[in-house]
Length: 114
Image 1 (cartoon, rainbow, N blue to C red):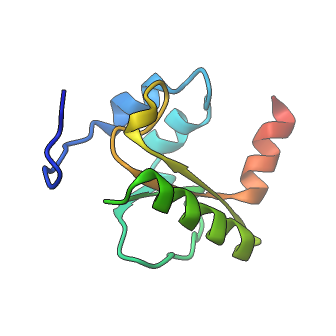
Image 2 (cartoon, rainbow, N blue to C red; image 1 turned 135 degrees about the vertical axis):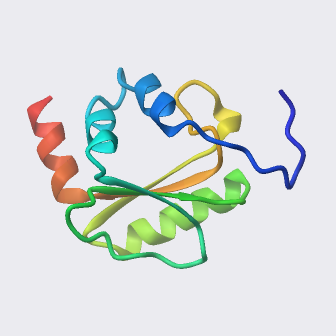
């Protein structure tokens, strides 16, 4: 399905998190519990306060810009890990372009358990 440049895409986040269980098993329970915040990107970072363990920023940015922002934030932010996702990569990518902010301590605990 081809999208027009400024077309608003409705996202079924529950279905997305259900679909990535094999690569990110903690995300569905966290989403259902309300620990993943999903917001529109406004050009700035928001402090990731408890109980949030992740924030997904929906961005109208291309892959190159997403990658650059995630890298810049990753280098500046000691408390969070920064990732990016773009639907052009298919498979487990988000259905819309996103920056993803995740608490480093929480991720370390999860990774240690696996």
